[in-house]
Image (tube, rainbow, N blue to C red; front, side, top):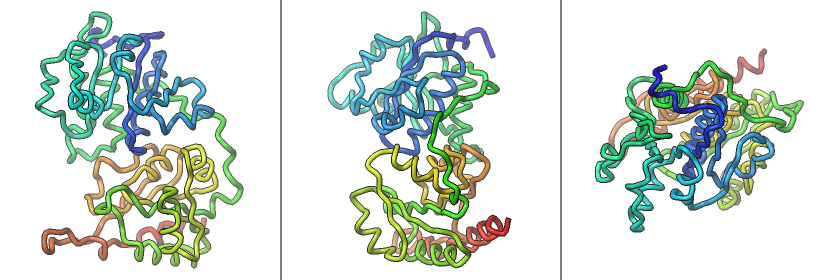
Length: 328
């Protein structure tokens, strides 16, 4: 760790401004945890995580849906912000180019038109090289999103990754029958990422035949549709993350598309299976524990401009893995 990068000192005030998506929100929570482990006083701006304040008592969570970046920059020595908030500010005519203590993070690339290379980030008069950055620097490197954010914490912020993260506290007790329950998240906001309802139904039937209690989870707006698609199984929808976390404490396995449900399940220590058309080591897979498995198609092909992949998902891999768990 170089002296130049040792800017995160005990007591420093840092604001972390997340994005709305649940999966990426868990990533910004991870970064907040790393900063707190170094002794920083952290404010996390996230409307969705505000429902979990009870489980994160050492973290100041602000529920603003539209973050006030100039105010945050004024009240904190450093702000680490999801890039979309700068893009929205630029589109609305708000010039933040003179604010020098905001570092912007993007998933894959930084917009060239924002010319962030010309905006050095300084903390207490010390320049922080690489502060504006992407989370995934090389999609073929095989790292998970958690490993990438840890790399940013270590290489750019100079944080010691050996320091333990406190994480959630005082969560509801794990249910006595959690070892028998599987939660399936069958949807995402992006239809192209979703495995087929018929495929999820086949999987549910096969797992139920092994003795698993299968339950589906969606958002409130889609609950009735999901009930019609999966009439033999409970379908849950929660108004906030606290309800969802409480439910996941009754489960031991999460099966999902590439979605926030899988990341939250991984964060809570559950076994996760992520169904995706991407390669098995794609970056945005759950990575908060080692109990994660990516299920991708054995083959795919282009047809009339679309990728055909759903019929070739090997559901047997999930069934076999969970059959072994039940045997144990």
